Length: 87
Image 1 (cartoon, rainbow, N blue to C red):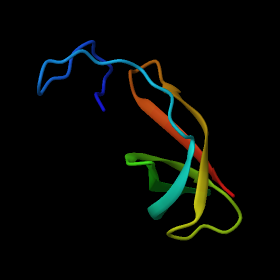
Image 2: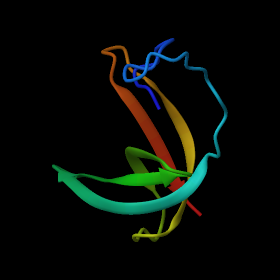
Image 3: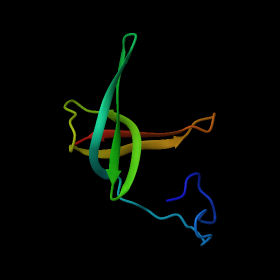
Image 4: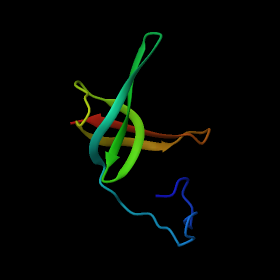
C-alpha cells in the first residue's frame, strides 16, 4: 500500500494501481478520547491486511469486534480520515 497515492512504489519503483478492497474487518485495539463534554472512540482496524486508524461508532465496542468502513476522505488541510461502525 502506498500513501499518499503515487504512480510508483517508493521501495521498488514498480507501477502502482488502485484496487477495490473489502470494507469490513475487525477492530484490533481502541482508545476513548474525552475532551470537554465530547466523547469519541478511535481505533486500529484491520481490513484484510490493511491497517487503518479511524473513529469508531457503535453501542458495544471491544477488541475483535467486526467493523465496517462508513466514510473516508481527505480534509482541506490534507489530513486523511476514516470512519467505522461496529456490526
